[in-house]
Image (cartoon, rainbow, N blue to C red):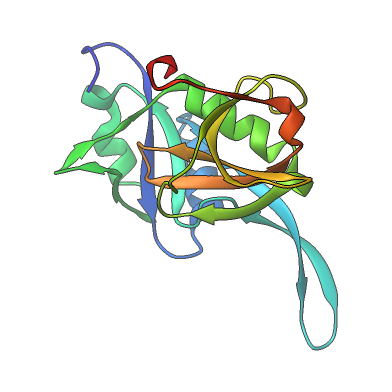
Length: 174
């Protein structure tokens, strides 16, 4: 956890399909929150529609002073709990939030959300829209699949990327 007056990012787990509502409640309470959404096509028997879906189902990110604001967050309708280890909420690095924003900004490259970190070569992106991101390569070929994994929420995002934009990291580089 962080020092007593510092604001940090945390992830909260919310009721099923309540992400947008919780995000709206936070905004109404003037709590800084972030809900990464991606546009996708949904098809029903009578129509097809583009809808914005949460990138991480069940998660909303909040930037708060935990000591002062955690009760307000937990009392928000739809919030179930903070995401963490052994009842200690995990602080989400600012860098990770920025990386998620970069990934959401390139929705056509997104492939999948993964619940675990795959084995593979660690790399850093050295060019293109994902410049600066680090992750693991899952598949080589004309296009590689880069998995950017976020330990704090135990979720990874798989994106397609040109292998020439990648630089191998030595184990001491990360």
